[in-house]
Length: 239
Image (cartoon, rainbow, N blue to C red; front, top):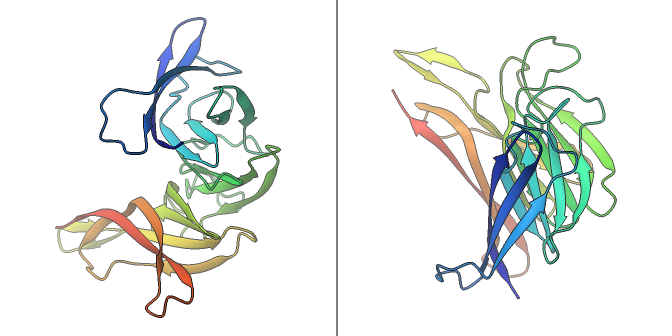
């Protein structure tokens, strides 16, 4: 069974917004989709940019729509039937591009809002991530940028592996070095508690936008006794 990839694109009109999903076999060198699924969003808003982010795991597809009203949205679909299961929004309905990034392990869903503002730092745009129960759609917790609140763009990229949530913050700790602006961090979060585990920085100090993209993979340790996640992150080398 095995669904290997999902591609989604918003098709806005004045009256309807739909997402077209192409589902490919996991062997995935095949060019033709095995199913062309029409996913209808409820509620529907023109210009919500549905399909900006997509994640699949455990029989569900999560679709981000960061410009839906009033705060951005994410939608959970049954991957087999195309049925919408939940419409997710942040509990505080903050307007911070909620849905810009999504990640799921099939049990929990993380949704990034990289322009969100911390209540104690008005207009800062530090970013946030909301974590939901995939089965019920219930919001479990919300975390703001653990570092700088000022335009850190925490939540600009997300990945989940095991009990670790990796969160990119591509404008975190921005500073001028010579003629270049270097920036970016990746935070590793305990997915169950929301507690920060580690803050990662690149060894190359002339990198800007570190955390623009993130991916996690569990690999065996040398002894083979247990597994641990490893992380990849993208950025742009400068100056």
